Amino acid sequence: MLLGERHGGNLLLTPGAGKGPDTNSGAPRWCRRPSGRPPRVRAVSETGRRRGPRSDVDVPVVLLDTAEELFGTAGVDNVSMRSVAREAGVAPAAVTHHFPSKRALVEAVVHRRGGRVGDAVRGRLAALAERENLVTRDLVESVLLPFVEEINTDPTDGISWLKIVITLALNGDDIIATEIVGDDGDIAELFINAASKVPGLYPGVGELRAPIAMFSMLTALATADLGGYGRPVGPKGLDPEFVEQLTVFTASGLGA
Image (cartoon, rainbow, N blue to C red; front, side, top):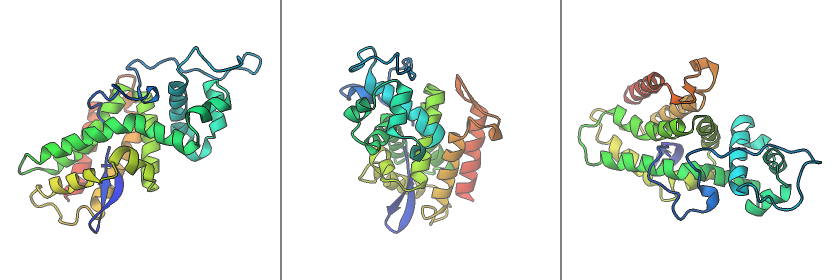
């Protein structure tokens, strides 16, 4: 789950990574990301900058790649549209041509991965409805594993994206509800329904314990590139033992 969302009187987390179904078909070009990351265009000197629109690169994709990296590294509030343009090696007007505002750019960055991540969480939680005698690990894995799969597919940029998402989520930004969770709140409802099938689970788990557990879990995942955890992420993805211990710890806290 990802975000704090109200369900009845309860504050619930609502999610969003797994690779999920292929969402490229029919999507705008900027929503598509090839499996092999395209070369990122770096800033060019003023003397070397060509005049007119860039035709040698897919500008929307390059802008999203660049914004994702900068937002994830420096924070959304600390990155301007002009700095994105400069790092991408395009004119500032190219950014506003494709993304009229910074808000639109942030939304596009979140949506590009968040759509499939949200769908994957939704699918896993829905599948739990067909089962009985669930355990807290089932709930945790339904939320965690889609994010893990997304990071394993694209470790460096996947981590950057999750840093953006978790910061926005903790601040209660509506972008998360719109781009990952879904306006209809079905992820929150699916989580509540699945939690009700866990024997002995604290009845008020959705009020505060679930948000604490999920936010803590995803924050740990988003900081897997830092030294505190021994940097359990590399070119091939996340260390499976790190993922296992994160699952065990979160499931234990949820069910305490």
